[in-house]
Image (tube, rainbow, N blue to C red; front, side):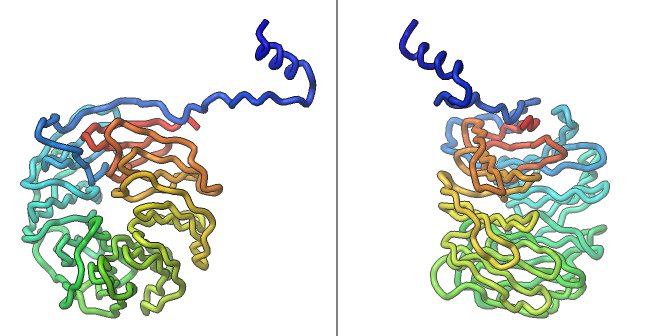
Length: 363
């Protein structure tokens, strides 16, 4: 018997004496299926998929757009149901609202499609790249373009209702734009000059505007999150801010260079910067934990129970949200830039090579 074997046997034989062998790895997920959506191109170098899947709560239908401009609908088993081609890349998660899907494209179009068939209902031409997930409220569809226009169109017909642009824009978007949020009668938008604005939902009239970022380079506000009467914002050159949604008054500030993505759950505000992942108290902005981010962020993180799921160019990070500890990394080989979709314990993940994967979490 070798010396190592003798040492292990001795340790096992003595109560209370633990070996130093590492624990067996925990299986965190099973891959239920994988579907390639975009044929590989020899001319592409490090492709990125910035959109992500949306899930219909009733049917389980999975809807996702890809960098080649196609919108794909699949059933929960991965069977293709229909496809629709736009004229540009899809850089945001679609919105499913009842029997209609709303999808923005870099060709300037906002598309309303029948969810069951993919048939076009209407197309609105924004004449600017549509870069955010649409939101539906008060009979309107609202979205932000990558050129800093917040646009509202009629949900049934696609006709223009109003739009809002900042008259003085000093910056440009680094990592996309923040989706529009709605709080009661207010539409909330974020702009590349470091400003957050609250607009009347019906008319687009400005209720308040607040520049949250100090003057400098790369001032864009790339993320918003709303909970109750408080609005959270992430500014690339400033940090994380909590604002009163009715007045725009600042309630707290946490400096964090390169802040660009937010999500919130259970009193924990999860912020992603270009170099770190931060767990922050949503109440007062105190930092609970910090993790390094070895990769480029793009899609928004999500909180699933006690787990945080953070897409980045290295893969999909799974984090114990209470402890701020990485518990796993899912790497499909090309990283994950898109926001994930989920229903129950199933995650739908779009890799940067446009493989759509269904992962069933097991732990």
